[in-house]
Length: 294
Figure (cartoon, rainbow, N blue to C red):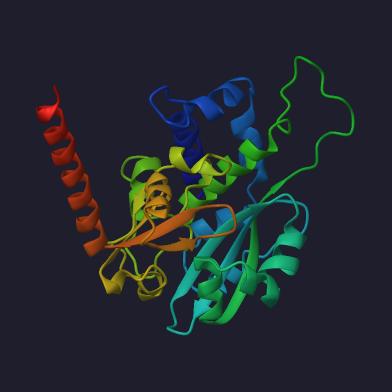
């Protein structure tokens, strides 16, 4: 439904422009200085996506295949992956060169081998996959934009981030906690499995790791995600600032969701106890030292 797609986009734009949002500093000035940006973004959405929503939002591989689209230009794509377990999983991404991203990276086994990720782990455990194009960003105007007119192409990074976030919300292709945060109140959110292959928040693309939103993944039920994050071995998987902390602590198993898009760490439960004991011991030693000083 076009109305639903518009409502989700409008709510997203209001949310990131809220002064209390941690995305305010990055996005608000650009959005507020671009009158008509909401209509421009809606025009980037392919009609096939609206038809998919109107058709009942089926997550079957055949339904995702009908979205189709030309793999070229700049925009947002969907990778539908039929697992060996017969679950259909979705991965949504962005690129300034869709053909390069799809044909030279995602479909090239050597690239996947050299860039391990949850996404590629799902491909490795699949029997069939398809690519569909969800949104296409038109080329910038060939003539200079008048000073008083909005230039929607001056920040392609922010434009693609918001477009990707929007379609991830439409396809419910984010962790449940993120969906509850960014979808309009009352929106239906299905519970996995299968669960999203998109774990890092698209809005955080280009943001330093320490500033990213943390998402706790230990409650996921999808067996493929549990295997990738080693959750059945008593570990806790997180995405965001704590992943950087875990890296420095050294004792965690690190994962990358996709090249440069999100760092993950899995910490054994025993490691967390040891870290807490070390901190407590340090406090006790420091207190003892202050008490004997003359």
